[in-house]
Image 1 (tube, one colour):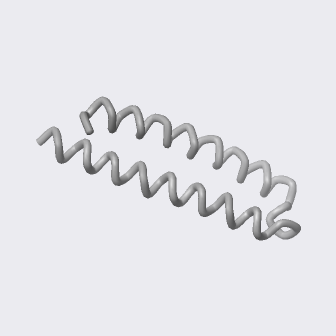
Image 2 (tube, rainbow, N blue to C red):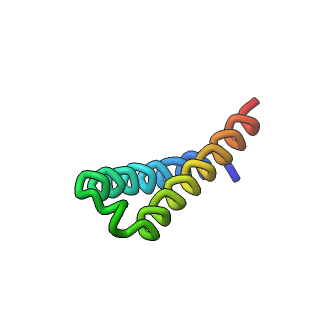
Length: 66
């Protein structure tokens, strides 16, 4: 992948991270994590996966530059 490709993926993952965090915030504000723990756990897994992928692309991009 090129640096631009990595950056594009990083940016898209940031959108997923932002949207998921916003949903988690709303979920918590409504105290839904107690009522729907499986859904809450899925949201946390989505967030974790997106952050992990973003980190991997960032490291790959940085290693291709140096």
